Length: 155
Image (cartoon, rainbow, N blue to C red):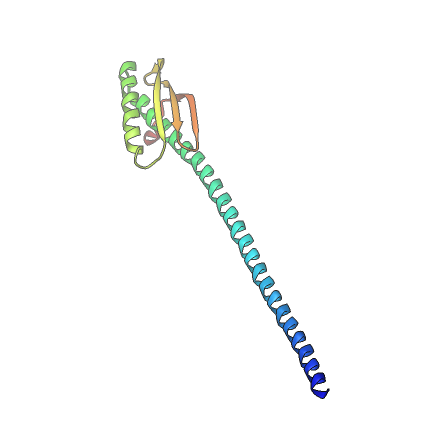
């Protein structure tokens, strides 16, 4: 009888201990799962922020590159117009400038620039109308510009 009571008490104590350890294991597994979820959210958020920053930086750079290209073309052709007296020779020089400009920028820029003189709109010593086509992965535009005779080196 005494042994039966002791046995019952031991079995009750063992069942309480096993439920306590099971409860502790469940809490530990839940904490680890929560840590992995938080880590995943942080990684995804960081990737989104990095992608957004990267994409906006490239767009701004493309516009700046296009503006720099336009300025280079305007200055180069402006000097050609300023130095020439013959319309036909000026048209040939603008075509040669186009070829040289494409060769010089081919390795440094992932864009294609084409400069086409508009026939009948070339006036040596005064101005010339050209069509500028800029084409890259991020930006494409085509515009017609009348460039005045102006060479910054003479200023």
